[in-house]
Image 1 (tube, each protein chain N blue to C red):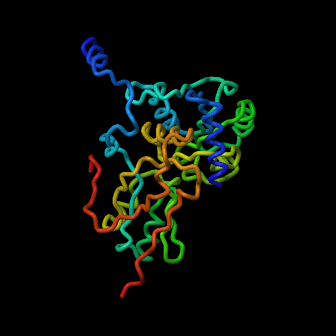
Image 2 (image 1 turned 30 degrees about the vertical axis):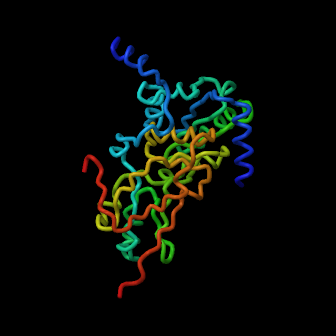
Image 3 (image 1 turned 120 degrees about the vertical axis):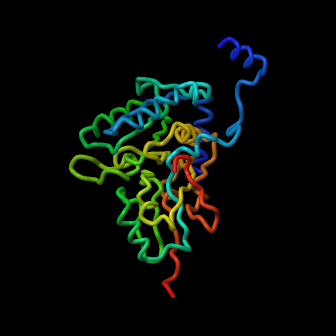
Length: 166
Length: 112
């Protein structure tokens, strides 16, 4: 598994160089993921300094940011978008909907994005913050390391960490 | 604006390594929960699984299965069992393998 991932990364590095164009695809999300994605272009996060650009056309895109639970009405459009992208291409599933957390598979939705598209990178969060999205994009192009693999999500007797607002 | 521009030019640094410093604003983000295994027994795990609206928490025999991908960080598990659940403060959660997002948290052995 790791060798194919390494091959993919090498191919991305060779073919994409340092510039990468992103097409976003909303497959029925509540649009909060889109708000966070849009914030990536704001000066605080400044996606463009890292060589990422948004493009409105799938034919110009290298990376597909898919949000939402993949409603069945959108399936054809999603497949067409994916097929229209030139290879090699990367699909990134964004948000808890895309990862199957919010909607079950039913006659209206597939429930997860990977029921229709082959997802390469998963970004959890509801919504994932722009910071998390930047990290996910870095993981997608192989510049940043995955961290969640080693996180146990357990807390031994350490002092309680509280969020700023609670 | 002008001062800011001149200061930026003078410093001469346009990019930094990732991360340049620990991200301070990250502590305000809602983050998935972390669990205290010592406080978790089957009964608590069942209550947590019932409280979770997105099905991220399930109990599999003597383990609490936490699917980080399905978690919406709503905090209902922390409200249900505040002694066993805290905020994980983890936000760099991107994964290339879906199964690495599914965590098995061992439960404490049955009550003495």
